Length: 355
View (spheres, rainbow, N blue to C red):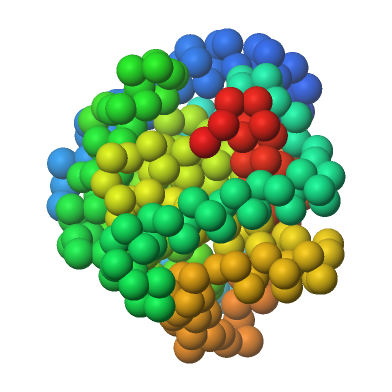
């Protein structure tokens, strides 16, 4: 590759950014021509290509990429300062190509129409709305918990392996597709991440690899969270980038399961978000509703709290800050707080359609 071609490739990053932002200012176009047009074919191709492999191809790819970067620095580190222009051009090529593949493969979904427009609901809600919905979730979760354990003081333990949960999560999308074809999930590619321990220290339950289309789930998280995290990551695969949207989709799909353990996983997870939100907005109302919660559910929450507490470390806020910046750079103004914005979707969907 001659020097002129290299320079053109590196500089092409700038017009790409302008083009993406311009297209992103027209979410209707993105929705029709990319998210519902090109993307379903692209994503199914990736899942066909890598889904059958029993391990995470994307994680292996990242490992090789890290080794390649280390090798480059080892062999050519001294020349970086001598020939900074050449290094910047080569770095620009890597970033430019990655930027192009990222947005073509999945990233343009950050600019599609919001999920609330699809359902015709609002995102805003009052504290009264939140209190009433949280009270409903408590009643629902209490009922499911007692139905499973026959004892309000016992924590729920899911009797499934992680592979069985993956299969049930996939089946859940088959059920949703009957009424909502846009959520059809074919050529599954749902896997445990090779870097589950790293993800745990970073504070994440999973992620979508946009370069291989694989949904990665942290294999170390408590089994209770596996159903909603799995359906959350599949939500990214079917084309939704917003964390609030995929949190909602994870609950929505899992709660519609005929399996009581999946229902419990869904409702207890959604309830956790609502209780946290209510505690921040009205501690007195939170305390009153907390007293209504079965002891067994509180024990499940305590198990989850202890799990994440064991892995707290000084680097976690750094990773969270980096991901926050990444989300804001990709049309997610709320950044990492968008995870908690699921509450508005839950409250307003229930007001219009009911759970």
